Image 1 (tube, rainbow over the protein chains, first blue to last red):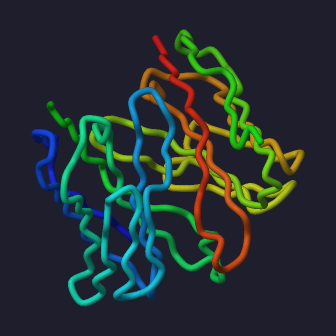
Image 2 (image 1 turned 30 degrees about the vertical axis):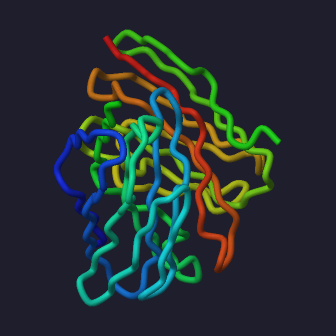
Length: 116
Length: 114
């Protein structure tokens, strides 16, 4: 079955530091890959996504590249802000054209805290 | 557009009580999902629906039932709550078809079973 593994957290950084959150996956076929973010007390929001190998998703200064050869989708940001403090989830979805109906498989989440 | 809404936001139950969580979406999405979020485990799929009148089991369906009588609503029921069902529950929806693979999430319901 599908699975997603994220780096162990929590992660604590100072403002303007470089951020990497590792994500690797196991899946059959060619899944779509996502990063969702959950701010305190809120639901999940899509941060970025990539649908095929070598695609780079980007949003709000965050980037992740779909690496099929290493089955990875690591999240990076060059300079984090206090407002980036949240929980970050890596997820994958099988192609909607099959019988999986786009169900998401999530990693366990990584708590990021950014200090001033 | 309100997007995806969930009712209630918080609930405390005693073991053995029943309750229903309501999810509503105004985006005319075909697919809807119920997840539970537990510390260190990410989100796990409970049940999902691919259209009005259809439901299917996800990864952790035991102890839950669902119904999708109207396209915009997806109900999650607990017939006899257990402490192991203490969790935060999220509903999500998405459009059908290739190229529409983003799920939109509600704000969550925090359920405590004593």
